[in-house]
Image 1 (cartoon, helix red, strand yellow):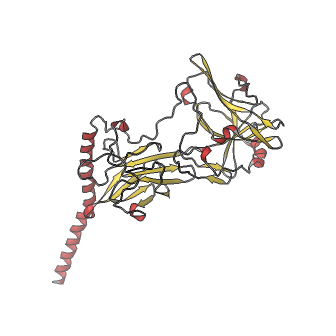
Image 2 (cartoon, one colour):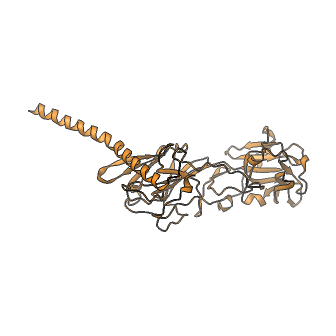
Image 3 (tube, helix red, strand yellow):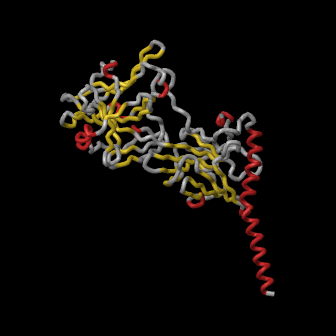
Length: 390
């Protein structure tokens, strides 16, 4: 009798295991299919066979101008041994000029001794260059005004974008740069690859930027603390000390918007059930939860890191979607292993059911989309437009 009972218990357990093991995929598939039907009904002109990552669109130069600004993305900048990682209340609209903890570098002596030891490199005028002027090597006057910039002709009109740098003496004819230093500069040469008049210039005379001042080489000096400096020769003497710029690390930043975590009947498609920014500043990766319009508990996994709503918040409460504060950060946490769109959501639904929401493949209706961090999420129950998916 005991043997029969034991076998019966094992059989029941096995059946329960088989049933439970298929429970999540069945729920996930049925919800995905129902969601797809509603999505196609709401957005009949949207092609499902596309990438749902809209964060990597090229930032080509506008019309006839060269971009001379740092994009409004949160940045972490190497500065000596200190990594600047301060993000203000306007994040992610923070520009370099908003950082309040920027201090004068203490690496000037090291730079002076090592600039000429660095190898000379060919300058690529058609790359994207984010630069922050720090030091200039003057001629002994109390103020010194070298300049760095680009020149080109388009539609029979000459265009000049230059960064005149006013330097204040700090000793031995070295000057601490101001002017362009305050907010950095971005010059994007990609749109001018077919313009044979386009060139960079580096000059010690702001009125002389002719072809003889064309920038063809530079030196990159990387300090023991990891800061990378671009060094330019303005007067042709080959010492590459006339203008010294910090090269600002390129970062990756995406805003993930997640929709319809638990809707069983249709959707409002406001894409605010979870809004999370993921930022890689070249030093560390950080996730910032901006809004949570869903009322179910969930666990979000980004790379190798997971975070659960109920660990800090009431799962059934909506946050920052009714009257959203677009500068607010509900919580933030460091992540590792984020390599693009390796992000997923595990949702705890009713009756103990759970299901996964991965980043969508081509052909699927998107429950997660990746946008530029400057794109605001919609208020509660306000559907996004079809333009979001074109």
